[in-house]
Length: 588
Ligand code: SF4
Image: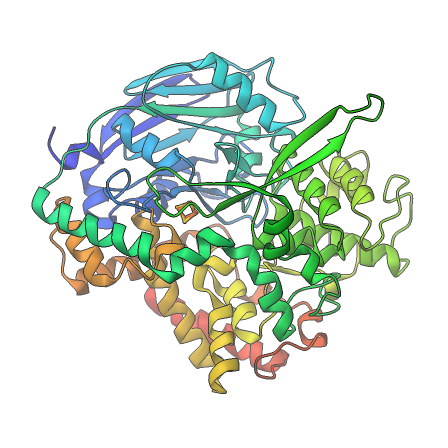
């Protein structure tokens, strides 16, 4: 097999016609590498302009790259779709075995369009595609259960990934996720609802194609360098030992841990929900994405007695990281770690995005506390900070949507606060619920201008932390310049399916030599230019679908609760937004 043929074939699946076809698109991979770069183009080509995100006109793209299955930590499949939460660019990355499995089938990307007339799942084994009846899987409460059944049905050899939705995706919750290999997720921006709207329960992918290389000697050299750095570096050790869950106490220390809907930046029970405490009392094991020697996925074991049977226990295995501990811990005032882990388990079983769920529930709790909604809105329950059990019930109601209030909550906090009020403390940016950092202006500007409104777009929190440590005072313009530079660089990383935890290992030099070993001889300027183009293309899709800087409003809460970095007010933030728009439009 020619090197370029091993990653540049695209599998197109039309669910309305139950048909598939394959096309060679080396034109796309040679220009945009793979992952985010190629997926953006395929989204533009296959999602109809102005499409309802929950209709057959939306497209779902999964893309890998020439690095997937070849280099360590190139484990993150990129998914792209029009987001039902924000109405524009939906992008989500997940590891597990997904990237290696897709690459092993011989495809570089999968494009799913249309809508099946009844529930199905798609099974792709090497080059073969089958549409399977998913009628009996539809309506199952837990996506874990659905995954177990598919696992039984789909025996076969090769590396296999099972990407499936839960009941939240079936019911169209705008922030429903897709789970792969039980503990990894395409979490943000509602890919689960897009699959649900297509009557697509799951995608099973497996393959065992070998992957050719352009320069084996160079490949071995670069591989060993990356591997050694991954297993010996202190940075990666940190991810393995405690993982990001240790951020709870780090952020608590500087007063940047969003607590009770960001009414405070410190939580009195931070120690109980921090990664060190959980590791000491609950850590059962660590697992890793395929082709990753780090293993940062931490799994807690929680044992629950049966209500009627003595000495009979159910053990749940719950994966956790910082974002979950913030969203379903401090943000809801939950300091009882076992209650929090049970709540995480529930949210994961329904296959919801934990960050959005936590922020939505925090807003609803404050609305109830302030008397802006009552028990009727909440379907008879009373939301109270720290009450994990009642939050479990609320999660069920978000998924089942028994009344108009829960229907609104299922569309996200920006939507719900437009109807019921409380916009000043509805913590969403670009309609996406906030991540767990209140470090200063950098993080909030980063959420607002990031192409997917996530902390992962440009790591604004790092800029704030730098200001805290160095005592430097950035301006709105310098913050935007730094964030845009970082986001352009990250387009290269995600176009190669790289895990962002490995960003310290994958330097420009390593990427350049790695690309050469798989058949891309590019200069530093050419690689940087790809990052800039991909960034611009993503914004052009956002504008095409109606994203507007003029619609961005800062929730007042971010100014009311002091953050540890430099002072900022709405004037400072508006200046940043105006400057970002100018700079972005210059790229288009
Ligand atoms: S470091 Fe963690 S998230 Fe990244 S590839 Fe490895 S196991 Fe997956």
